[in-house]
Length: 273
Length: 267
Image (cartoon, each protein chain N blue to C red):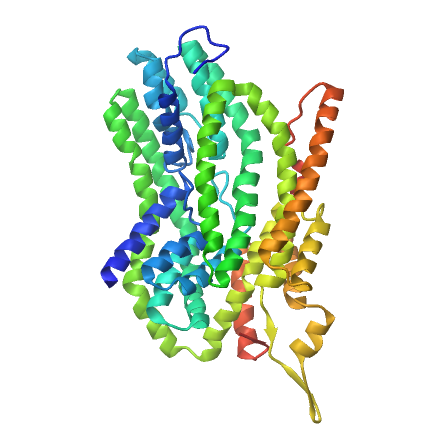
């Protein structure tokens, strides 16, 4: 493994870096707390690699204490940051601690901004919509595809740690520019899928009938479906969207309101299964 | 057999939180939970129906930045267990899963907050061990973190396994039909919550045309979801390639690289 900026011989092998990446991904948010958030997990992740960088106990302790401080970002993005931080400490040793801390806190916000939307909103939206739609038809293929993609993505995350370690800062700025265009593109795909979800997964069937003399007119098939397919789901989506946007009701209140509405409509036979 | 199933379901409850917060392979998204849960319970179809319903409620929900959200994965897991145990009818299974799952999922918020509070002590204890330079002790303390998170899902799951069946059987025999029907109807309506929540966090106004296109393809033309995804991918690909061509030109003009943080998303 060659690093262009380093003139001292590498203290870490490729295996050490991979191991640090694995330890971070395993622990990530599993010691998450309100004080230092991912701090302890970062210590868990880097402690073996840092031991090789600092044979001296005192320096080692100082470095670990530094990593105990507040850290929180999307874990995939954290891989890049921690990889780069590890390279900084390997190069400049104990003198780099302040720079490492500044680098970590400076990068975690912007990267989480992109990473959280991409990884925790858009990706589960697209995969979740497809998998849930198939699941409702009793088909597990969507969920299995999602699982396989996650395995593939794990390898990408190993690679991100490695990239952070080898090219550090430069890569982050270059990637950030591409990522914002990519995020926009992903939300275009996401919204197309969401648009299709409204008529296909929200189901409301009116059970009422209009009787005029001999003729019975079913409200659902005879009236509503003639105006527009999935009219009620579309209206319900718009109403819930407006309620949530106004922030007058919390999500939990909305959920209970819908359950109560469904129970009332069921009692009077307005809606049927 | 029933005991083995119960143990496997509790083990799944432990693993899902550890995985979600770490390796992110299986995750605790409801539809992902429903596959192993369905295999354990021997009724994959019912499990997938329940998982799919909770997944759609879950769409716009992400616990990012340390926020706590209802744990719909846990809701799906206990819902699947109790529903498969108590009923063979799919619509009724959905109603049962909803009746058991929603309160447990809500409880997930409090349990998540509690786990993160307790982990504040874990973090401090680990730091104290480092001050004494007792690294072995520090590493042992670290593992309390995942254990606490595992308990936060395993304990409610175990309680539902022990008591859920009797309570649900009692309720099913005691409550009138319109009530269970009402819960099934609610199950069919609740995906709207996830969708509406998602529209808040995504640039829905900016790309309203995509939303409408997706609606028309599905509602009028009955294109399946995968087909609509491909249409979405086509639009996204076009946007990406045209904008990537523009990007280097703009960067060359100003001479700097600007990282956009997506402020327009908050509109």
